[in-house]
Length: 355
Ligand SMILES: Cc1cc2nc3c(=O)[nH]c(=O)nc-3n(C[C@H](O)[C@H](O)[C@H](O)COP(=O)(O)O)c2cc1C
Image (cartoon, rainbow, N blue to C red; front, side):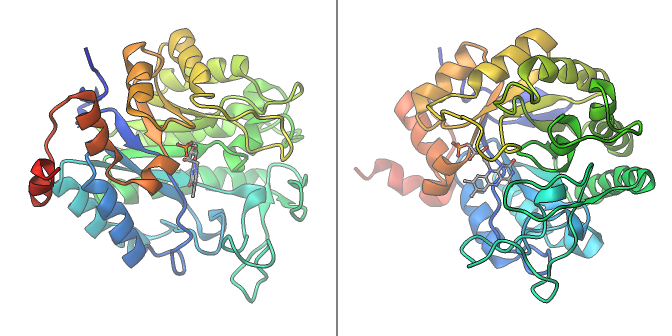
């Protein structure tokens, strides 16, 4: 029995299947505004049979963007730019999520392909901030956030979530993975603060917990809240899966609905062996030990592989990244390969019969 194309309901929001698009930066925003590229790119994905599209890391404030080409949702005008894409996806029965982000010490870079990493002021760059003045490899030293600035950031995350819901997003995801700000706070490798946002596990996870709490209180009851974490820093003295399970238990209690389980990004030379499904065991451990829904991600490329993850209950959904860039209609082909009948956009119907 196949389950990859079974619906999944979280709160009262139903994703029509468990094949989801992983958030992926497109480096194509102008002054933080999404535009034509996003319309075409997200539109292709929305006609490709998936249950949920998670829109790329989007700065809750302009300084939270990773590159100068990343989107932000800093005000209503920036939020409104997403509306046509959301409406189009909804016409095709696809739910839309947005990944709310702050890049912290890894912010203010050029778009990939530039001949230098950091964006100067003239190129639209800014001073990056972090829990502590500890630079990521190859980056300049960030400025330590004050206690007051941290409290304001919590408010910024909640306000961004409200704007996202107002414009039609169905799901909110907090980006707390890949070495960005919230991961920098919970990892002992990037956080040496001595106030209530540093120190032990409770102190280091406090900011993420308070952000999740503030968002949960600010958005409607029916809107699912996801958190993407890095389940391990892949080094002995870093954040690990035991910490992740403890964190997931806390997030579950405050109303987070799903943990999107990735790894790494906080240590530039961490020994990561990326093989098919290599992060799935982390999603399974969190699902089993914390009793919360999980999404698995990372080198999931084959329909049978994705099916296996769902059928064996290692995760509740699969997020596909690069495979979706290569083939935005991955889900339509996967269903066909697995012998499952799903609706195709009527514009594509003829292609089903042409061999
Ligand atoms: C072009 C590109 C951009 C990405 N941008 C993001 C992002 O905005 N947020 C995020 O959490 N992960 C991002 N990722 C990571 C993916 O979401 C995914 O976790 C990773 O690529 C592993 O999955 P895959 O093997 O299916 O690609 C990005 C990956 C790629 C290839």
